[in-house]
Length: 426
Ligand code: IMP
Ligand code: MG
Image 1 (cartoon, rainbow, N blue to C red):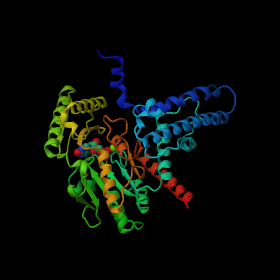
Image 2: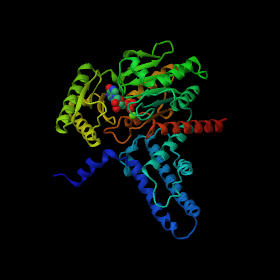
Image 3: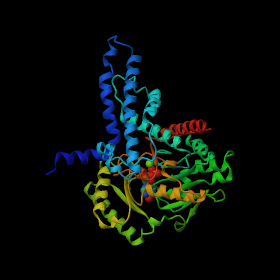
Image 4: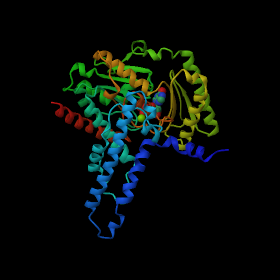
């Protein structure tokens, strides 16, 4: 029998972030107690008074959560993260790479979004997502320099399926980071084996780096593209026709990836392809199966046609489950995700992609690049099932954006807080 729990799980868990929902619940209490919806027709206290009180209470709660995260980090340091109070309250919580100054971040976002002044709309999912982003930027700034910034492509740097064109405002922000010696990795699921294809998607940025007057030649070469999540590496090369040069796998592969043998890879992709075909039949999808060297996916048969969102989600969850149950997935990481209007299964995932960038640039620096000095910016964090940026949380701090404009705003925040932290240190 299908229990209520299973229905709830199947319907909701893959579309919720437990930590954000939990904070939202905590902030709902002061909202109910202190907001004054009757203020719109009754003169009882000023909005400013109400906002000041609500702000104080929200900030207190955020401070309490901040301290709970500090306690979790202390447990982490002792290898006891599974016993922290936060873990008990939010079982899906992972590891933190830095402190999160949530109270300060709340005040910052409140000054931009006027959360405390609202009388009818409580602190929302997006309010909290943005507070967490700000807190993470503040945390990285306080912990030291940002050695490596990695970016997802679609929906993060440019709109879904589009390219990074010369007028994209993110370009000047990325060049600013590079001028401060931050290394850049574009860690995208888009899996191509030729530099030309990535050039087509990223040419605005690649050409701006070539033409930049502020970057040194050495800084210009501090960019890599990691394609297919963790499968194809290209490094910036000013002398190459497409400004990117293929890096042979043997020169960047991590020791832990050596066991990813070709027969196992093909066996996993066969299984995934069969599962995708099953979904095409069951959901009557008008889809083409695309099989690549390190991926298999479905796209609409007719260009421009849209799959129903529910069918995409169902397909991801079915394929994910079938692969998880199969012995071949026990020895090989994979990532099944909903790309907005396609579903792909890639070998490896973005945690491996970011790890490779950390090691690749770490070798150049002669020291390892730690998670607390790495920031991955992406749009797909909703849950392990069906979201590919989520996996990067295993190895780096992360920022969760909803669209490319937010990515630009966040990079301005990064510059602001990094500079403030530098000023504090001198
Ligand atoms: P991302 O947002 O940069 O990670 O790119 C994800 C999108 O890349 C997917 O939605 C697909 O449309 C596209 N894509 C192209 N080739 C591949 C592949 O081999 N694996 C996964 N996604 C791919
Ligand atoms: Mg994306």
